[in-house]
Length: 276
Image 1 (cartoon, rainbow, N blue to C red):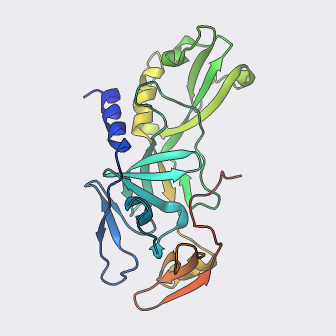
Image 2: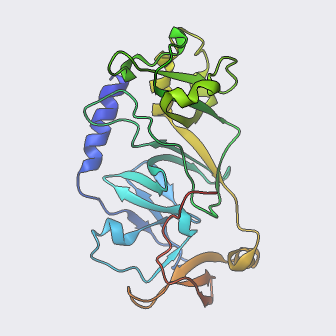
Image 3: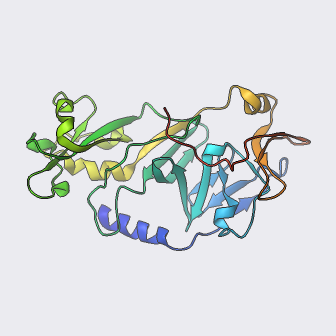
């Protein structure tokens, strides 16, 4: 099946109502269960499933075990991570390597197989997530009034015939940063380095769509300080709990025997704002 057709069917599948994730009980720490969304990805600490979302808002979670910014949603057997820059489909989590593979759900629309590259990746403030050495960057110069190298032209982004769009890889000698003011926007998007291997063909946009489909990788770091750092060093799992939906979340350190709690900000700990 061709890549654009596969992606179209995948996005259509996400439009439907959310499906509940399968909970896998943890015998030693019931407050920190594992989950399975569909048949592809296992979810466990420090990631967690938003039960309020998967139940269609019918339940008000009293606790969760995991990092606030690593909240996931299960939609029709697809894991979704919400970041300040948009929503990303999670395709794999490697716990031994502390890496998560994902791709931007906003890159393609249902009616257009041309990449929609209107946003940079943005991570929550204080997030344990970061790009890895296996990532590289594609820089898009969108709707520019200058005429650039035809080998870097993104033909499907051509609009009125007077403005052009181009893509460049990290390290390209002729990346026209000096002409950025002549473009509607300049956007950098992470992709896996291996997705561009053999991509010295002309034009470059022939490898761009497959690379964006393959996505990129983020790593996460364990907490070293604060309440969560102390909790993990003592062999516990970080989380939050509340007695009612209108009450503030409190920090909780889940252990095999006891749980300790500390009050935190009254807002529900959802992904934050753009890192400064």
